[in-house]
Length: 113
Image (cartoon, rainbow, N blue to C red; front, side):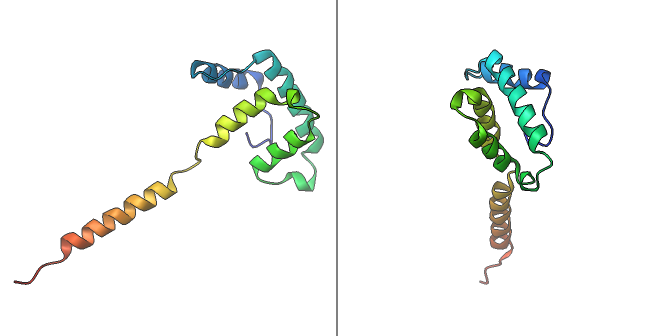
C-alpha cells in the first residue's frame, strides 16, 4: 500500500475476496486492469523526487493522475479500507496509562486520622 512496489495480483485477490466476504463489492476484472495501470504509474514515477512522499500522498497523486473514476474505482475501495484502519493504537494506550497512573496515585495516598 506504500506504492514503493506493487503487490502481485494474488495478494490483491486475497484482499478482494476478504472485502467481498465482509459485504463490500469489488469487481475483480476491473481491479486487475486498474492494478496493471497502477503498476505502470509507479514504474514511471518511482524515481521522481516528489514521489518520495508519504504513502497516502502517493495514492492521491495516482488518483489525480487518472483521467476518470473508472480508472481507479476498485483500487479506491481497497485504499479506503486500508487507510481507515489505524496504524497504531498509541492514543488508546496513552489514555489507559494515564488512567492507571491516576488510580495508583489515588490508591497510595493515605488519609490521616
